[in-house]
Amino acid sequence: MTQTFHEPSPSALMLLGERRDPLSERGVDCAGALPSPSDPDLVERARAAKEALGDRVFILGHHYQRDEVIQFADVTGDSFKLARDAAARPEAEFIVFCGVHFMAESADILTSDQQAVVLPDMAAGCSMADMANINQVDDAWAQLEEAGVASRTVPVTYMNSTAAIKAFCGEHGGVVCTSSNAEVAMRWAYDQVGGVDGDGKVLFLPDQHLGRNTAVLKLGLSLDDCIVWDPRKPLGGNTPEAVEAARVILWKGHCSVHGRFRRSHVDKFREQVPGINVLVHPECAHEVVTAADYVGSTEYIINTLNAAEPGSRWVIGTELNLVRRVANAHPDKEVHFLEDTVCFCSTMNRIDLPHLVWALETLVAGEVPNRIVVDDETQRLAKVALDRMLALPALNPAKD
Image (cartoon, rainbow, N blue to C red; front, side, top):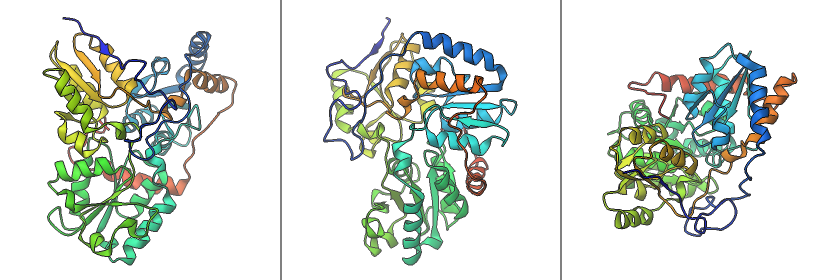
């Protein structure tokens, strides 16, 4: 039996900016327009520029990138794996990061000063990372100090955050985590303030869903132990009593793609496709994660499909470019996308072939475009938090 990917129908597929979904979280609606397919001549121009640069350039491609860009990547992966791959290539003069801004920052932190990290489009940001800026976090910490709980609170930030937030965690005794090692990172954090069974707290930034899913499903805390901190409200919108009682303070942030999936999508596929396996990313809402059969990082999703039996049926809740790529790699399995109306990662899709060609040809011409530079002090403190993560037990940094 040979199955192909069950693409959402064009009539139902919500491309960027075409429709709105009032049931999705605030900030999840898509903006802009999906660029049209690139001029075929650009493929040859990209090949020629990359060949002219030779070993001087190393191109990183995030899993959520479109295929026209991925074909030119020297390595593919998730954000932290790619940053470490770049650090392992000190001979490469230019690191071209086909991802988003916070990822390029991490690469700059981990590579040498002699290497230039280039982001082909400076508008390629991350809505989740943008939901926690350093001024908001500094203000929140000041409020926690005033409430008398900061001394027993450890900040943990997801890799999907700015260098400034990583530096904040480094300065305040905290740590960075990936979606694969969030449990280990949070256990480490609690160990700094009396353990999971004590009265210490974790301030989890910026994705509330990964923090909640980890705390409840991995550490055994309850939903009542968790509060959400809204940076636009005093005390994050909580009472002093709630802040005092909380074990997990979840920043009010989320992924604009994974935040779209709902429990009803899972229920629909279980009704319509007998024997379906539901596989989702831990950035999905708690109701989606608890209804799934398998939950894990992007690398986990890829590896799970690689190990699945031929003829098995799967529905996957993560970014559509990745789901398509995984499905095409496994034509012997039936693969569905968890939603009929979907938003691509709009900022990731800004790194299209025209921008990549422009960046490479500019490098060939002797100029360095869109260089990402993290200042020395931010680098130093962010690396403290990253090094704490690297020192954690049972860490597998390839699965972020």
